[in-house]
Amino acid sequence: MTVAFRMSSLYVPTLKEDPTEAELASHRLLLRAGMIRKAASGIYSFLPLGLRSIAKIERIVREEMDAIGSQEVLLPIVQPAELWTESGRWDLYGPELARLKDRHGREFCLGPTHEEIITALVRSDVRSYRELPLSFYQINMKFRDEIRPRFGLLRGREFIMKDAYSFHTSQESLQEHYDAQAGAYGRICERLGLEYRPVVAESGQIGGKVTTEFMALAEAGEAELVHCTCGFAANVEAAETTVVRIPSITEAVSMEKRATPGLKTIADLAGAFGVSEHDTVKTMAGKTPEGTLVFFCVPGDRELNAVKAAWAVEGVELLDETDFEKYGIPKGSLGPVNTLPGTLVVADVCLKDDVAWAVGANEDGFHLFGALPGRDFEVGQWADLVVAAPGDRCPECGAVLEGARGIEVSQVFQLGTRYSEAMGATFSDENGEEQPFVMGCYGVGVSRSLAAVIEQYNDDAGIQWPVSIAPLEVAILPLMADGEVFEVAESLWKALGEAGVETVIDDRDERAGVKFNDADLIGWPFQVVVGKKGLAEGIVELKVRGSGERATLPVSEAAQKIVSMVESERARFV
Ligand code: ATP
Ligand code: MG
Image (cartoon, rainbow, N blue to C red; front, side, top):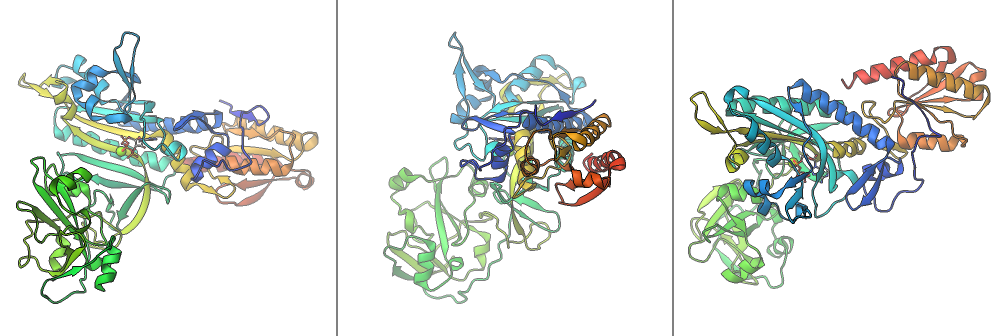
């Protein structure tokens, strides 16, 4: 099929100025290159070039899903509330779920994800273990009324997702398909040209959930990661970690209460005590569902990880303002000494090496210096509690972890029987007994991936598309709108089109500078400049947008050379 466009008739409303609302490169460049337009906060229209790139991402995703035996379906965006009530998520989901009523007053929501719909579908049609396993995928719009939509396509409210769901008779069968999905997700990232890491997202410690996030590495990413040369990588929220701690207080001193009026931060406190922040211990309070107070102690320079806190003490939640009033404890001066009766003290394992602690005195305006576990207070439980950070030790090989930031482009997840049990979705096993389906779900952010690629592929002039998802592969830039220059350009354009290379000719009556700027802004991977001077020498000029390389090609060989360059570039992404 010939894909040959004329710039004069292609709808590409480029912008000369940076839009003020766009902080990130991908957001700015998608708008400036005329690929998307905002309709409302977090809601975008895709213009022809934007949609071409989206379609290419979708094609890659389809090929990889088909290759692992997942079958494409298309599920409704508008979903009946009853199914969400069955799964329990109608109440759990909160304001991110957009709810609406039809003319009869019946309640619906806009699908933020499709577990309920697909589980109901399989529940009604699949009876026997003989029909399993099954895996379905769709590529569809999702709606989530995000509290802070931002960064253009990176965090929209309406966005395109590929979501897949699988149904199995056993955990082993789920594991097999989960591994196949994870493999496909890695290949999708590679074919999009992304530098990425699969990361540990939540360990098996909560409810048997197994999950991996695929992170495109980018400074602009919202996720913080730690990774190691051994291949280990994790979201800091989920990473097990070993904090390297060299306490500077080395002798057991007697405990001393000091007035610390007006000291608000750990830094203030460390300064007042003449120690580093690292030597202080901060205490955060939580409560169990039964109402037991739990004090979590971590080094002053580290953050408590609420997920890990809940692993250590099941169901624990951190206190809010009214809880502090209710329990009558001073938020700014908590510590493990002289706690209310029944309080459980849980401390991060790295504090075991500390000889004496600098802690809050549980009294406003006072701290204790030299508090000693075992002598001045009891630690009820030692646990890994902190948010992992660069410099910590790798839980797998012990080497020093490095930090990075990432954009979550996709995630694979073992659901187990979470939905099938809640919704009564069962099959009959070999013995004729009803069993709940064992399920997995798998999501790729299609529109987010487009933006993630641009975050990794841009320079001051614009986008530098990997050829696999560039809206078009080659641009011909004739420096004159008529005469021999234009004729040569046009015949090259036709020849490339006929050879199956997606080509655009900039036939607009514009100055050379305008054409060059637009070409770099849009980021056509191969740009061919046809000018009078070159033609006098029998050559055209080729520029490779990504590397900035330039070459001169004899007019007679130009088409053939460009075709083979495009083909070898394409081959890097299959
Ligand atoms: P996040 O933590 O970034 O909010 P999530 O973990 O809630 O994302 P999932 O439910 O795992 O998202 O959805 C699967 C994929 O859909 C994500 O990996 C991401 O690529 C994409 N996605 C999720 N939310 C958005 C959004 N608001 N805008 C664009 N893409 C999104
Ligand atoms: Mg996710």
